[in-house]
Image 1 (cartoon, helix red, strand yellow):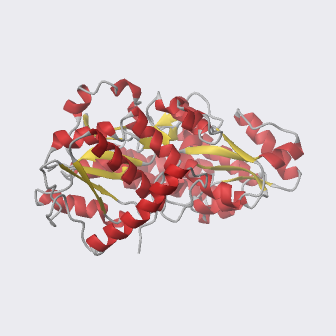
Image 2: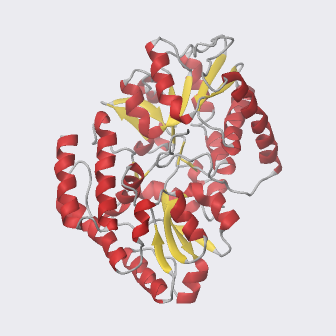
Length: 439
């Protein structure tokens, strides 16, 4: 059974943007064949390394072995496009190796323990600290200090542990505010840019017989992921465990439930279900991500759009998605770094992610490229990165405590939405637990 997708990680079953040019069509056709080949090679039980070896070690001799967990055709197409780009620019070979998502961490840690592993690993960025502490990732400080374009990437996409850089994100997935333009036209309001405008619009939509907003209230990491914009907007952060600020953020969203703008059923919804509810056409807004573009294009029979979440100066939106790193026992670390510079960290390389997958480039200059700014759905997410982007997980959380912290806040968030606890009680209880977890 596949693991449940983590926040910001695109689940394999999620549909992608359907717009497609001839180049993309050919890449996807290649990807389908490539995915079948990788599956056959791995046998579903192991992922071999570079060259002719089968123990997970990079083969060397100009071969870059890249471990990833993608089986979705568009995502595999991106890996193939990166392979094609790198091989065209270097006298080297790339071997993309598929490792199932729910096996990636254990295989990386096991390989590192045996002194082997891939040259490059593409993984859930939120797991950077876990993998670094387990000895599966190589430090990147020396390479980063010499990277001419380092200033193009925000600190929020750099994954450091105890001051050491271990991974970088070439693109991000994040939350925005989707809106039903048909409903907004009917009730006579514009897409909101402030919290007051959002709440006025939800009130008007509800008065007209529609739902106000959909979001996830699950009592786990997805709930914490969705709660963070609203609780940070109220002034809460993990460096300053202010129970009053946390209670204020909870109170706002509980008020949405009390006013009939948000259903308590949200406590049972992962991030897929609320967007399906939105795509059905009876809800004005959805707090959801760029990875839903394909679902909107295929399922929504109405005009729609996206704006940044209407947050204030303290508000933050987690930047999720995949991190890229060099394996701790890479056969050729220099060539692995060349691969990252040519693909995930390169201007043209980053333009491939929004075109093929719908993810947002992390470079400031690439975020201004036509492939992003020319897409009305992607541009608001790109602006959110610059204005509200927050590291995921928060660097204030000790790596060993990340899962516990996410569970604590996710459970409090869910209890408030579901009415099991008052915002005040939930905040006080959560802060008491967080104080012990964070220290």
